[in-house]
Image (cartoon, rainbow, N blue to C red; front, side, top):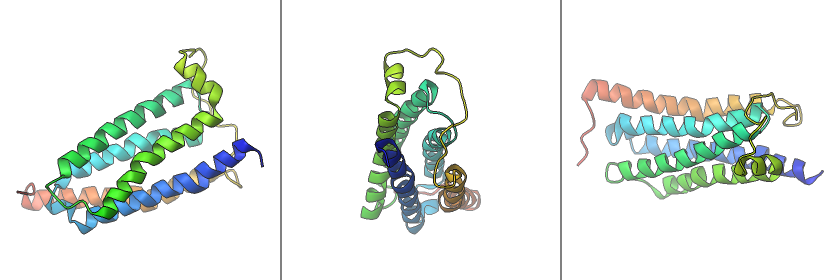
Length: 191
């Protein structure tokens, strides 16, 4: 197995699943602190935003060739996600308990996208150089990924299905719980 394949397998079978597990743990912590009664719908919206901020570059990188456009979107998403994550913790502090488990989940949720992007850079060094040297000619289009992912070549579909079930749907349920609580009881009043 060559180094590029080994790096790809670490991304697909270690880092991306670990990111999903960290997301599930974070959701579980929110549920245990009854987010709907504490920081409420506002924080649920922030969580949805952060999921979209990282979900878009992950899906784009799984489905399309990583070129200058995808690399720029990955950089922008990573920076935006970190800013919103900082705001999320700042907003939530004092409104509900942030347990040690949630802190650990946040550590993974913040660092895994960074390490995934670093490994994409390792695999797509020429694209990275084109990106940072502003040599963007021909690199701003979208084309389907040529290299199959996973043993069957269908990794992207399986990963997106698993993430939908174990991460996206729980966060949608979190948003719904917060929305329903606010409709029935008004915004949570936290001292």
